[in-house]
Structures are given as C-alpha cells and as structure tokens.
Amino acid sequence: MIRRAQDWDPALREKARQLDPRRMPRHIAFIMDGNGRWARQRRRHRLMGHREGIKTAKRIIRFCHDVGGIDCITLFAFSTENWKRPKLEVSGLMMLLKYFLRRETAEMVENDIRFRTIGRTDEFPSFVQRELQRTRDATAACRSFTLNVALNYGARREILEAAMELHRRLDLGELKPDQVDESVFENLLYTADLPDLDLLIRTSGEHRISNFLLWQAAYAELYVTPALWPDFGPSELVDAILDYQHRERRFGGLRSDFAATRSGGTSRPAIQPAH
Ligand code: FPP
Image (cartoon, rainbow, N blue to C red):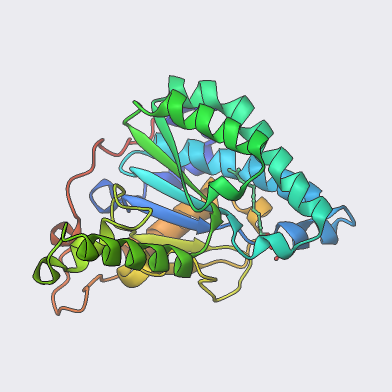
C-alpha cells in the first residue's frame, strides 16, 4: 500500500514542497461524503461509488503516512444512522470492509501502521468483527502512524456512554466529584489515546458535522471541499493542509502560537519531497 515521496508524481511533489513541516496537523479526520453522487453521475450502483471510495481512502492513508508530521487519521466509514440505508448497500459496505481488511493488513504491519476503530463494532456481523479483531491484533504494536476508522459511530452515543461510565465510577467511589475535569472525561471517550483533532475535512460540499467527533472537534479547523470523495486525492489534501497552515489558531485566546497549541511534538519529521 505504501510508497515513498519519490514515487509521487512531479506535480504532487512540487505542491507538497509548499507544506510547512513545523505546522502539520497531527490528527486529521475525514467525512468521506459523495460516493453515491459519484456513482449516480456515472449511472452506476451506489456500491460502485463506495468501491471507488475505498481506493481514495487507500491513496489518502498512503499519502498521510508518507508525508511526515501526521500521526493519525480518522475516517468516518459507517455511522450509527447508516443502518437506515437499503439492505443491499449495508451488506455491500460490510463486504467491502472485510475485503479492505483482508487485503491491507499485511501492508499495514509492514509499514508500522496501527489500525484501530471507534464506534460500536460489536453490533456488526460476526464475520466483520472477526476481520476487525484480526487487523487490530496484527497491528497492535505498530507505532509510526495510526489509522482510526469510525464504524457504527455516533458522537452523541459516544458522549452518552462516557457520561454513563463517569457516573458508574463516581457511584463506585473510584472517582470523587472534585476530581472530574475535561481531561478525565476525555479519557472516557473512544478516542482517549489519540492526539487532539487538528483538522476536519468534509468532501462533497455539505457544511455539516453529522454527529462526528463532536467533542473532539471543539477546536479543530474545518475544511469543506466540493470534490466528491472518490475524486478527492493527495493533491486536494495538500490544498486543505495549506489552507490549515495559513489559519491563525487561537483556541479562544488572542495570540497566534502554533507551537504552543500542539499537544506534543510530531513523532517523525515531515519528509522534504525529493527533487
Ligand atoms: C458517504 O457517501 C459514504 C459512506 C456512508 C461510506 C463511506 C465508506 C467508504 C468510503 C469505504 C470505507 C473505507 C474504509 C477505509 C473501510 P454517500 O453514500 O452518503 O454519498 P452521497 O451523499 O453522494 O449519497
């Protein structure tokens, strides 16, 4: 799955050279919208759009891993609301997920990519749960990059579950009310071990968060592109990161100080693409 910067096409290399390695977003999340419209425009079944969407996901994972400075990406692949779609589309998505995991696990291990999920995957069919567990286990020790996939995920449900767990711990006396603060609550969310979300990208032009990472997006920069997900690629992603790098992140304060806003250093230096 993974290639190196030297393998990028010259136009991408040229564009990526404009990136400031000191201001890379450590954690980027994607609302991968527009697969259905992409298929409709071509008079194809919606599942063809999702199949193409997986190809885009692979290109984006590969690029984010290779560019340097990005530690983690989160992909919104299946929401708690997506069960309402036609049965054929839901079962097709499950099969696509299974084939994605089967095909990509070895390459993830080879490239030191940790695979993890957020959401209630225990409600997925057992054949998908098995593949998910196999990939999680195989990549558990991988450290250089995290691929986090949101599956049967809903942010309200995540927050509600965290609130219920907090209540349980208070009830048992494991926590005292005066110990509870934002960081205690954050540690009860599905994303507890992930870096803060820096950039949230939504494709296909809708200006909505759609019940995705509501807590985590509190200070994230939002970027909406009209490109449909299957048409989104590394070049469009570089545009998004360049836009992000030109913004002033104040976190409610007055001064612009990117360095101070980051919750730690990047684990790897950004690659300066080869000439
Ligand atoms: C939204 O497009 C997309 C989805 C609900 C599914 C997205 C899933 C993938 C791209 C594949 C999963 C990726 C991995 C890595 C397993 P839509 O169907 O809502 O499009 P529309 O709004 O144009 O109808």
